[in-house]
Image 1 (cartoon, rainbow, N blue to C red):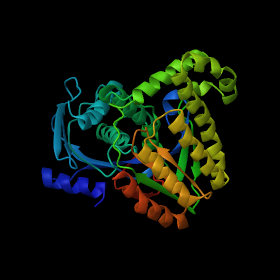
Image 2 (cartoon, helix red, strand yellow):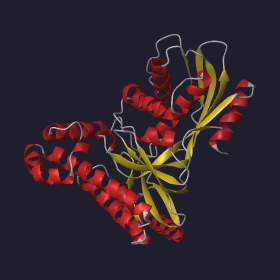
Image 3 (cartoon, helix red, strand yellow):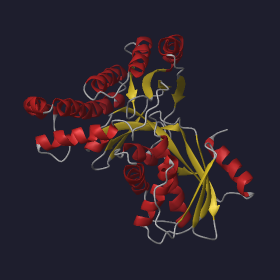
Length: 384
């Protein structure tokens, strides 16, 4: 069963009543543009056909009574008292969103019985957290008839992750979960929030391969990377690395390299990655999949060598996928790094050869068994 069906079934069993409201928000895969979002840069993700559904009905009081069906765990908090972080991580995604919804809409105090179910693999780099945040925001918006746009809900989700969860992520994951378009990637300018939808050619398959190397961005080095990027931006005298062109970086970067070699490497990735995203939009628009594949390969090398966020298992998956794909597509790590997934694009007829080469070699080499998904670009958050 899908999350929409599971959430509804569990709600009926748990509360012996029909839910009156149900929403769904997707996870995402980012085709190119990694760690550029919190540098005010460019990204090119698409929403995927895996996500999180929340269903529920209003209560006669001000309690939020939340049941996470997939974890068999419950949380409860009052909307009349200050909402504080929990010692359970999943609760903080929900609590954080409701807290910042109340900051934006102080009159929102409507309680609800709520059931959550999702099928985005956890800690895989496919934004299970953003799907939960955006679904929670949409549920509250509908429950309270609140005048909040989907873009505003996305930014509230980002705040929840930054402050309640403690991960200094950018805004890409929440924005694509909120604004995704079926059969399209969405190039997002993470400063202006302008978007450019680009159709995905019918002959192109999007594959996601989960390495099963778990990452935890809060406990990992994600926040350190952000600080290093801010150091580099300060050196260049700009608000964010988005404001540094490749030419400017090449002209003045050597001084930064001498002062702070790590900040130099991080900045090199961000500056060149922003340029790659803009070129990738044009490549996809003109169905130049060979060049898009080359840009993806450059992106992966940059994440591996300059941003230093890949791990050997991920590098090996990319190598295997690229062997099968050849010059008819590309593969790269996707997500925050330190584990998680790779994304590969290729004509549909290449899918089985990619699946086979990975199935025959990855577990033998690493001791881990991959999960293989063929995804479709999907609509963003919506009512069910």
